[in-house]
Amino acid sequence: MKNNKFLLFAILSAFVLILAACGSSDGDKSTGDKSGGDDAGSKDYGVKYLSILTGGTQGTYYPLGGTFAEFIKSETDINTTAEVSQASAANMTALQAGDGEIAFVQTDIAYYAINGLEMFKEEKIDTVSALGALYPETVQLVTLADSGIKSFEDLKGKKVSVGAPGSGTYANAEQLLEIHGLSIEDDIEAQNLDFGESADGIQSGQIDAAFITAGYPTGAVEALNATKNVNIIPVSAEKAAELIEKYPYYAVDAIPAGTYGLTEEVPAVSVLAMLAVKKDLSEDLVYAMTKAIYGNASKISHAKGAFIKAETALDGIGIDVHPGAKKYFDEVNN
Image (tube, rainbow, N blue to C red; front, top):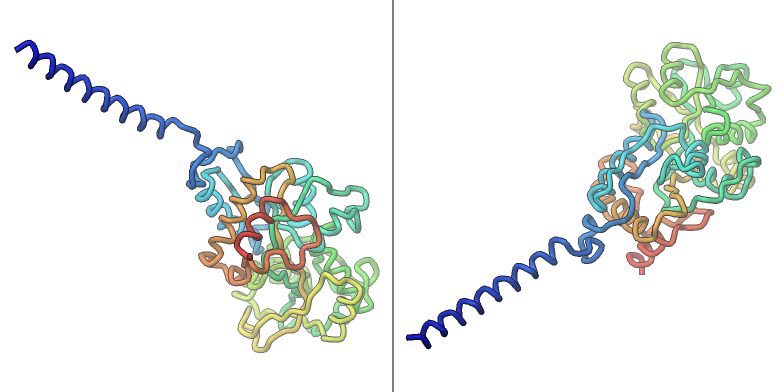
């Protein structure tokens, strides 16, 4: 009888030890290092919040920034928000100052910033690198169909919005006017308005035209076309060639018929939109952000989403690419 009791005790003891071992194993899984495994959302990147600097609410950067923020939050579990800003030039300065981690910027402005040129002659940027190129940013000279403005030369003496001084739009306006024999200082009444203010100004008759550098269709121009008949002034092939010869970061572009109610395709020029990041972000984090954006590009509802591809993400970039982004593109493109 004693032997039977001893045998029963031994069996029960072994069973308890097995349960304890299983419980310990499960505990290890729940309290272990979250940086391991393939689940990117559980990885500890050492960052609790990310800010994406975009542009005005009626441009292209802001809605895309909101989409990118959702992608990054889903991929990394880091709270990420899209912030309204003054766009390209201001965004580079803000990154330098630590007021954001990711930013939309034109490729030409990024080049100026890193090399201390144009508006960055007194403020060279040295803490920023590229994440990747996005889509063409078309320089759109917007006016109304009944404005009487049919060419760049017709702008002489007119009130024209050229964007904020030091902005990407301002630089584009200055360079296009130059190619057409005009200057901001001498030939037009320059107004420094953002996209929404420009559209409102054209609608109310306070200004005659506006330069808007953004991916089409641009929200501000669409809103204007909802109440007035919009016209986009063309850039001839000859003038486009002159511009590109002097400023090689431009490319020939065209705004398709049907955009803003246009009956014909309008020849134009463009630069590229890109994303820039702070250099001191970790390689793992930037890799995850890059994967989140380019790996989910097919889900982007905005028309410019069709241009956002990993295979073209390094085209047209004139500054160093962050190692985390480069790692991702090397993996998917090789």
